[in-house]
Length: 111
Image (cartoon, rainbow, N blue to C red; front, side, top):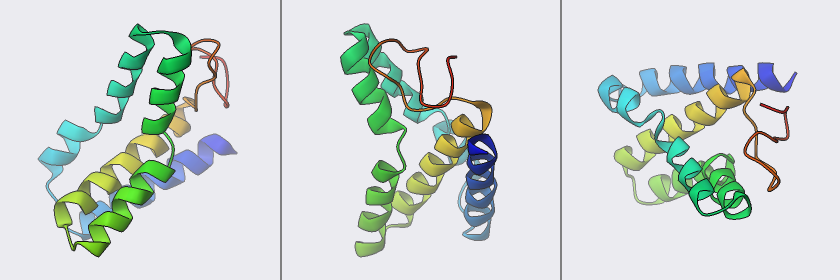
């Protein structure tokens, strides 16, 4: 059910992004940007999981969305939608929030 929920978020994000007529080139370039949070694992698994989870929880792009709306920034709005799409995509294919034990341990499954 959680995989289906993630795919639903991805599809709705794609629809909204398209309706707002944002750049698809920017979408393609930034879609995997939240995965840069994996670099925290170069320090250690505990710090890596915290950084990764900050980049992969809906709270962070939701805060950016709020800032985008307050400042009427279409650029920040586009980034927040891309970010949400990324998280939905990850959840849809089984990547979840990470436990500090290992990168492979997530709230959805062991990858």
